[in-house]
Every structure is written in structure tokens, then in C-alpha cells.
Amino acid sequence: RGPGFGFNFRWALFDGFRSGNAVQHARLGLKLSEQNLSEAKLLRQEEERKLWRDYSRSKELLKLEEESKLMAEENLMIELERLKLGLSTSLEILEAQRYYQEAVSRLALARYQAKISEVGVLRLNGKLIQ
Image (cartoon, rainbow, N blue to C red):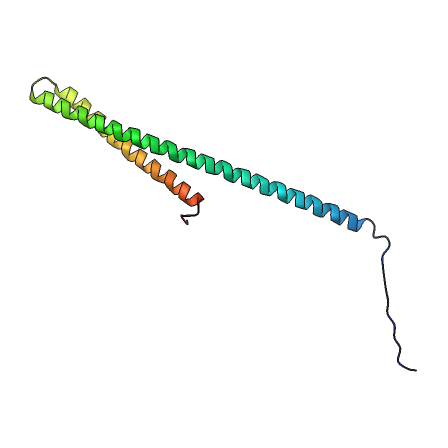
């Protein structure tokens, strides 16, 4: 016997619709992935808008609370001057002091909230790493 050569060739004419089903599944998977990506983008945009809205509101509130503290401080000074002149009672002084303390507390809280909002915006923009 001498050297021999041969080869086999096999081609399936019918695969039971497996390749068609695989293509359909791949298309559905792609469509689902695209929808998930679109939804993720929308959620991120909404998160961005919310953080910016919160940040701008907290800055506005901070300005208002700073003004409120200044007004309460001015009111306290007026009441103390009135007390020196004998035109005010200790009850009015206590009330002015209470308003001033409340204004200081609200200002501290507004500063804290503004900083929290700022951190959220920085984190969203990638300028702050957790």
C-alpha cells in the first residue's frame, strides 16, 4: 500500500432551527442591553438634575439664613440698647436671644446641607472620589 490522502467534509443542511433561534436570542439580548443603557442614561440625567437643583436650593437657603442671623443679631443689639435705656424688659431680651440662637442653629444646618449638596455635585462630576 502506498500513501493515501483523504478528507471529510460535513455540512448540516438542517440544524433544527437552532441557528435561527440563536440569532433571535442574540438580537433580543442586544435590544435589551440597549434599553438598559438608555434607562441608565436617563437615571443619571435625572440624578444630575436633582443634585443641581438641591445644590442651588441649598445655596439660596444659606443666603437667607445668613440674612436671618444678621437680622436676629441686629434685633438683639437693639433690645440690649433698649434695656440700657430702660425701655425693654428681661423677657424681651430673652426672646431676642432665643431668636438669635435659633438663627445661628439654622445657619449651621444650612451650611452643612450646602456642603452635602456640593459634595454630591463634585462626586457626580468625578472631581471627588469616595
